[in-house]
Length: 106
Length: 162
Image 1: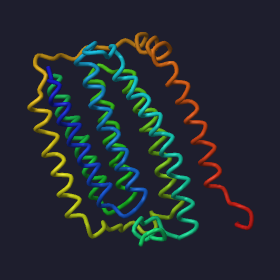
Image 2 (image 1 turned 60 degrees about the horizontal axis):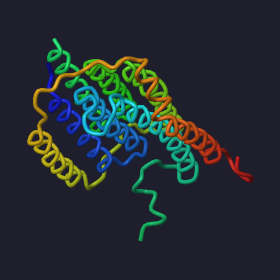
Image 3 (image 1 turned 180 degrees about the vertical axis):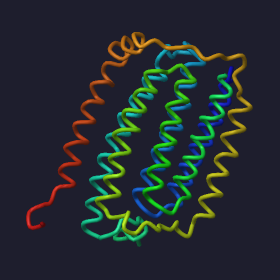
């Protein structure tokens, strides 16, 4: 049986990969993809905890999975909004590279 | 058997994730993200979370990847597929390694002993969703509605634009 700690390590590794992508990428679309990786890492952690530690503490049995469902919902909304913002950015500035969107930088 | 599946799926998850953050081609990054997300659905199956695996494939593998590919297409990122990372990437790699160096020992030191994955029935999830989590469920529908309207308002052309 795979222990909980291995799922947690997998989730940590995936989150770190996503963090690197967010910090190092220039294209806004690639940053959104990296954010999706980070959200997935959090979901792995939640679901692993939910199925390994059922009913632990003050949490009911399915709470981890339900929080993961809400995270997926919010991620879907986020990607829709991000697409709109990226389209707007591309129409106004003809670029999606975030380091060229420097109007508010001083 | 569970170990075998876990290792295969973990390799696909992390390999896809790494490909997303290192590849120079935006379309390849989207495809690598799809591999990673479907492998995560497999991880959910190893954890006996069948419903979440289904939701993962439908929403991430279906909807979100399609939206991202549309974003690539509409911004013509695919015409200039050679993207470059910014100059602070060594610092970003250092920060990521640092966070991993904090997270991994934290998980290993606070290891929970003698755990075993349990299955979760669909009916239990449904009952919990519509009783304990009924209010967040309604709020989530409102969030989706607001995001939809906001996306339309942001993306449409204003007066005086074409």
